[in-house]
Image 1 (cartoon, rainbow, N blue to C red):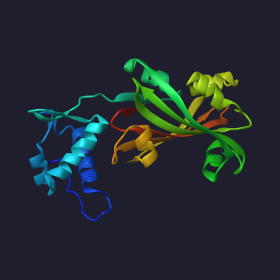
Image 2 (cartoon, rainbow, N blue to C red):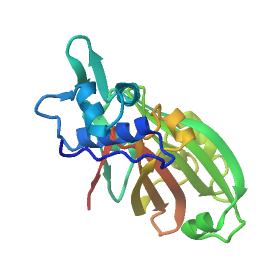
Image 3 (cartoon, one colour):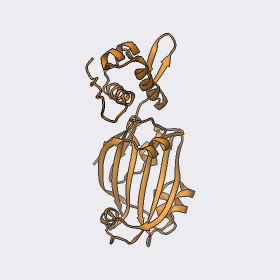
Image 4 (cartoon, rainbow, N blue to C red):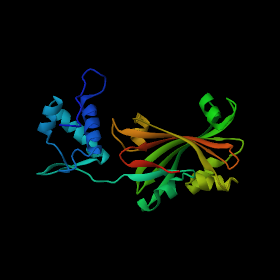
Length: 245
């Protein structure tokens, strides 16, 4: 069937995980749109050259992600969940970006650390390597479903207390405002894709093999001074990006 790639043995990646990746990709490409169903386990097993147990493990992983659902007497139904559209603009904001696409949004602070800036963080924030920065680990939810996880760094000298402000306000924009920064803009965004690591799988409630959209971004104040460098990981089956001028 078009859209399905053969799995590779002895690659170090479990066969069920490879199959889950292939099926997830095929669903995303719209190959099964006409029926709304994933082919039967016997058909998939034949196509991939594996036993039904391996296919069943792949489908179970996709069901845990909410991508498919087993229906007694019918087979495996594709769950039609529209992706949230997340615009990347000069003033990118999570809450206003999601807008009325979700009834409830939450932003949780997972961790806060003050540390020395690495070479990469220093370059993005225009600091000297070793200068103090504050790192926040945050998780964003839409309708109680994890959407993104972010690691953000801020110059410590300018934004002391940003962790507590974020914990109370659940918003970077409001935390900035509490610390005297009334407005800021997106200067740079770089988007890539990768498999989720173990920590992101747990926090975003994904299964092994899930794909993330990774956005590296730098925000500045209105004078062009960097105020935030972040690496945000979005569940690729839950979010799509729209780049706006």
